[in-house]
Image (cartoon, rainbow, N blue to C red; front, side, top):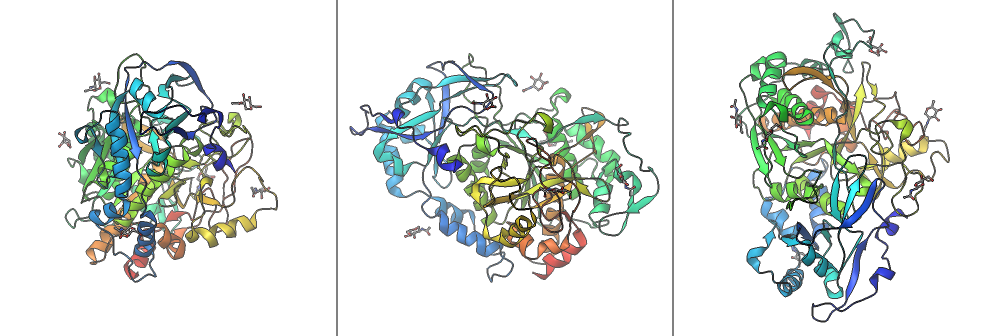
Length: 599
Ligand SMILES: *[C@@H]1O[C@H](CO)[C@@H](O)[C@H](O)[C@H]1NC(C)=O
Ligand SMILES: *[C@@H]1O[C@H](CO)[C@@H](O)[C@H](O)[C@H]1NC(C)=O
Ligand SMILES: *[C@@H]1O[C@H](CO)[C@@H](O)[C@H](O)[C@H]1NC(C)=O
Ligand SMILES: *[C@@H]1O[C@H](CO)[C@@H](O)[C@H](O)[C@H]1NC(C)=O
Ligand SMILES: *[C@@H]1O[C@H](CO)[C@@H](O)[C@H](O)[C@H]1NC(C)=O
Ligand SMILES: *[C@@H]1O[C@H](CO)[C@@H](O)[C@H](O)[C@H]1NC(C)=O
């Protein structure tokens, strides 16, 4: 399968040479066939360019952590809601002392003492700052500058790296080496208010929403906070500012949440929230530049809708540093374009976390090395075990790759076979997160760009067996054979509106679309459910999927219309029950609240 090809060792590159570590020979640890489509190898990397190498030590007790996760997330289990503490998840993610010792010894042989090392809270990641020349010696590799013509981005990477043979069992992965991910925000069009005249719906009066109640007719072409409360049956529900519930949003790639935009939005759409603010948290040097020119559409959208829907629940906005393009000549210290591990290191080191966190970013799964995807996914599992609901956008390219126009999508595999295949998105494909697809219109239908399909990295988790097999059984025999992995984790789990969200951006009103709209929306209703659970003296929902797939789905609005074209196909169809474009559908808050107060 694809996976083995990805990690297949390149034997010719493994030709051993003498290494300075205990006379032990280097052996290829990880190699990729070549850089993903679009990246072109240029000059050798400048030897004194500094890179921050992250070394992942194995987590031998992760399966124990996973077992805890299933138990505390399963509404039928006696331990439901009995979430783990930071100390408990740290202990279960910790490496074996032998691995710590082996890696320490190797690092010491290259001149690193303890004070040069940055360790994660569980000690499962070690970070060092090294010039390219030393990294090349340590990893027996050669770094090059790779350039992405379409975007102008450059990165310093390699396609293969080696480690002394005796270290292999003590190291899961080292990055940045082979990772060429092009992490992106899942928001697409921004067009100005008034520009949308494509619909025939009257802007006054009411129409019937998915919960059977009346919704302002204007919601069929302009989504506001009021619309979402109406559509998802939460009109009048009041959250608490002080019961301990909190809501989190993440920002990456220099996306800054502008506070003036937020206040103007509140004035328009939730006057009670006007004057309120969120807590800004800087991760790995992330900033929140308040210059109006620095406001980011993605960050403005997330904070306006997320904090607007959940107000007065205290909000946290995490800004993680890490932004392509990297300029090869400047001796920049950070050229990661895959900042999850920094965010995970940060939040996993905190004792007190928001109980629901939404992220609207992702990458094509195949551009994230398998070993890295597994480790990031394990970090999300740890958050779930701690009682945090983690939601991700499912992506904006239907079944296809990062090209927003389904007609020109290429959808080639990166594994050397270069064959056409559907391209799922990560982290939406991680089985320990809840992925959120996109909808449009009333009655709600799948929006064409809603990311969906099946993971090539992660097997279908057992909580999905009935739902996903039910869908696969409905497909005509042979449908899309070879284009997707029928045994993979199905994406998404749920969905919400994702089109024509009215935001304030750089002082003006505009419309945005994307699963970047649906993830903070769905997550906001989850945060409101947590609020209700806390008030009732119950623990928060934590990892949602075992609940959603066992009973939660009965309180979601099933979406049965629409499809998600891509890769030269019509994509998958929305159907009765779960489908790989809308999951189980959109929330009915009152119904969900009844359910979650009963489990
Ligand atoms: C991890 O696993 C080992 C071996 O199975 C066991 O001895 C140890 O107690 C476990 N650690 C924790 C924190 O559960
Ligand atoms: C909502 O808009 C869509 C697309 O224009 C239209 O097909 C549908 O009939 C509208 N819904 C209602 C209830 O008017
Ligand atoms: C909002 O919070 C940010 C940082 O958390 C602070 O810099 C800013 O001054 C606050 N703005 C208002 C209007 O309170
Ligand atoms: C903030 O953004 C503005 C406008 O893009 C830019 O000129 C300024 O240098 C930025 N400030 C910082 C501290 O990055
Ligand atoms: C993959 O195949 C397509 C179509 O045959 C071709 O255009 C493209 O250059 C190939 N890419 C690689 C990396 O071989
Ligand atoms: C989607 O539905 C259309 C119309 O019923 C049908 O022709 C097509 O085969 C379906 N596609 C899939 C992938 O099920």
